[in-house]
Image (cartoon, rainbow, N blue to C red; front, top):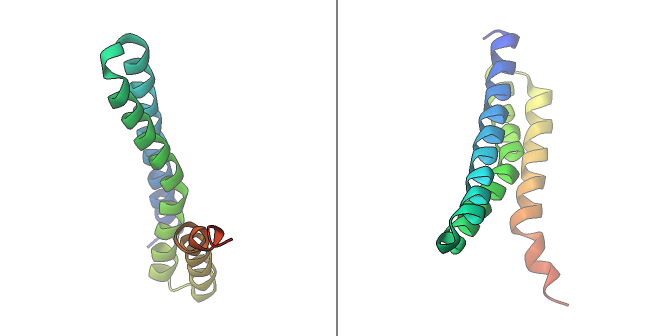
Length: 101
């Protein structure tokens, strides 16, 4: 696969995530401003938008692992895999140790 096409896959992943997050956040804000009865729904939509915003770069790193593996680029596959594992540990394991104290 050509390098341009692989970069395009990563670019598209990040672009879609950013656009989806923006749409969700904008929708939540509009719901909060104009539809007072939907306050908890607006909060939920905005929370999902923030979650998508945080998940977008993580998805980009995960996509990069597969792209580099498909390219058979061992060095970058290993580096991006370590980065991805580091992010997952920081998200799912480290917070459990913070509440021990």
